[in-house]
Length: 253
Image (cartoon, rainbow, N blue to C red; front, side, top):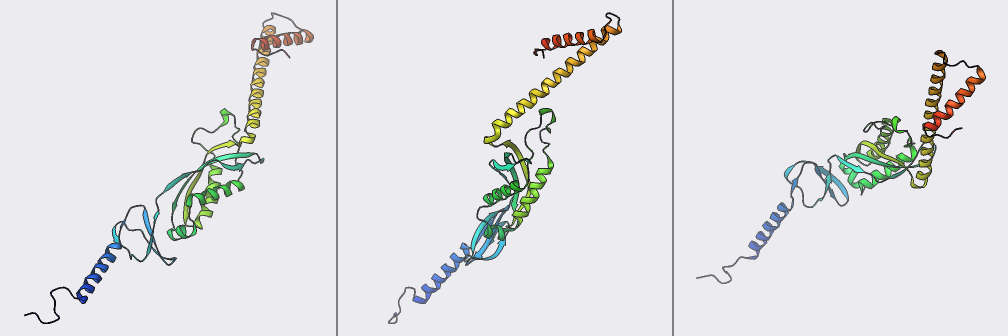
């Protein structure tokens, strides 16, 4: 016979034990996480930093801690055209390529919300302090492809790296990949460049004509083909100069 008050179901104590076991199980499973290469977990509780986990593979983290995943791999950020000035104060636009990574995860997470926006501001501040050489070199004097001026890159890298270090970012290089005049001055500078190139071309043509005239007169006199006094020599030089210039498509002076 079954005693009075005793049933076949589970009692309150057993249900409490099962509920507690289930809660512990959920708590345990809730702390499981997977660490990946190039990723880190920044842990915090009630707004305070509690540590960083950089291990890879399956791991367990206290579920009560707030976890924020941070990318600690090497990254590249290409900027939009940023304002700059040449040594004479002429407005330029510069595109840069920044090579960087998160080094101090605690500072990077709690000090800056948008890392790339912060880098953009750092590059802008550096360009405001460092003059940039204008893109005005003639084609035969420009550095070959890939031979950028090292001074500007070193100066920008040093300045941006110093500013970014304070918020846990490590900057390896800030490379200027394109330098051009600002739209408001680009047309004026292009006209100046064309005028300079035209002046160089005219100077080259005139030098060639003078050399040709001198060589012709010297050959005529050395071979005894003509005998010239000073006046006749000047007239011959003038006539030959006009003829050679006309042959090269230049107007006579």
